[in-house]
Length: 92
Image (cartoon, rainbow, N blue to C red):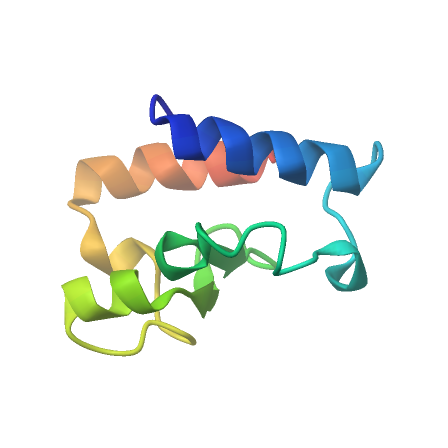
């Protein structure tokens, strides 16, 4: 979150969600965030203990060497980090 791009993307997300937990998918204009899309991901957290990549940009998929969509977000973290991340997702 210390990267300038992260601040810009979170700012955009906060503006379009208009007080809701998350914005509607129709509120997201890919043209506005086009320079961030390749390194952006969105998680499906219906079950916070098992977050799944709902969307993953091409740069992220290339770094992992495969398509991340539909795979486990926590599979890439060590057990201690998984506990911390799961705790954060339960707060959201």
